[in-house]
Length: 288
Image 1: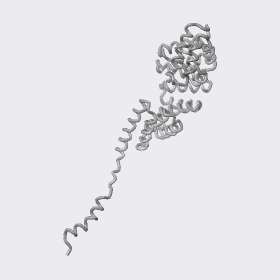
Image 2 (image 1 turned 30 degrees about the vertical axis):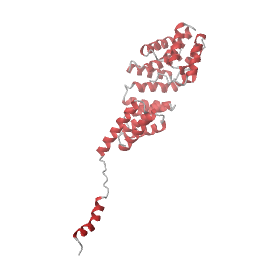
Image 3 (image 1 turned 180 degrees about the horizontal axis):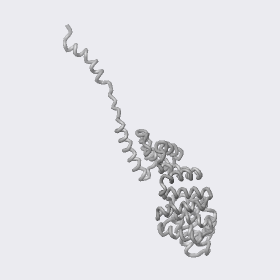
Image 4 (image 1 turned 45 degrees about the vertical axis):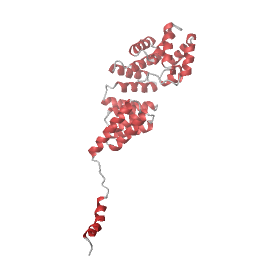
């Protein structure tokens, strides 16, 4: 006769085997969405403090959790752009646009990326599509103006920059670019007026400071105001001593030539040599 406890023991393994079958909790779509949005908020915070690569990693997790939300893809693209992943950003923006084709912000971002990749015609097309949906975006008009400059369309560029500053009165970068266009058009007095207006908004901005100095020096070589402005500008951003950097900032040939003449003035020799030694070590303060 088998003891009752032995019978019970014999039955136990079956019960244990059932008890130890792992149970996997599958998150609901609501839980996944909540987690994704929480991670997106963390990624946005990282972007705000300049940690773009870490933000991109978190944003990539966001789009895995909520792949149908275009906001996650836009956030990922922004983080990728700021961390130099331009190709990946283009892919992310394309996905965002598939999900939300009438979102002007996505079109503006695609246009800005095209501009960064030296594709001004494509940039113009994308930005203009976005402006049909939202026509009061100052930043979009600024990018549009820069694209027109690259295409050699000074008149269109000036109109776009004027629209940008009309929408945002303190948009000094747009006013500065108006002056650059006007100077290339031989409209020196108006260009000088606008550069002075820029410095009234942003007194420390190196780019308009040096451009104004060059324009004033063209009228009266070696005048004290030009020399003082150039001294301050080169101290603020030594990169502007480089012709190649001026080109990157979309300076025209006439302004670059005037600047070269200014920097050849004997009283600026020490400033120029110091700037040449420090060029490349500064990112400047003139980003829009």
